[in-house]
Image (cartoon, rainbow, N blue to C red; front, side, top):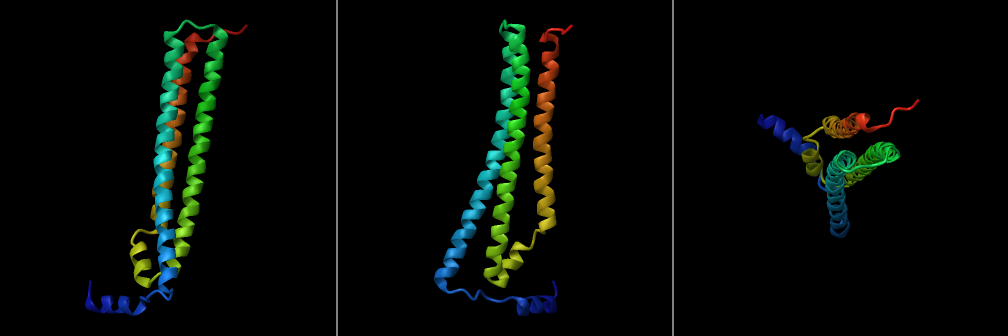
Length: 161
């Protein structure tokens, strides 16, 4: 970077106008929101893993245990319910993360210009694209495991007349 650019940047940066106690509160709220986002992300991945594992258990139960044909139908329905619930949970965690990001943006507006400049290194658009690609991958993964589960069950389902 050129020295002129650095000087222009320094002129635009303003220190926080908050008193020390309020500044500390804002930093505590910021840390809480970042921890909440990480918690929600972790829960999303665990939800994905649990849904996939549940599909494996459902298919294994149908193939390894001698079951009545009506139980096979019930297991297929349970398979679809597991997928629907997992996708709902993923969406709830995504909305929760979005709310925390909004809180972080608001908190950033109260802090120094330096803080805002560092936070702006990764654009909002880029962060949203990454977040929603991962959400789509998670949802598609659940749908694929549900489809595989259903296909594995087709031979076990009784033929309706």
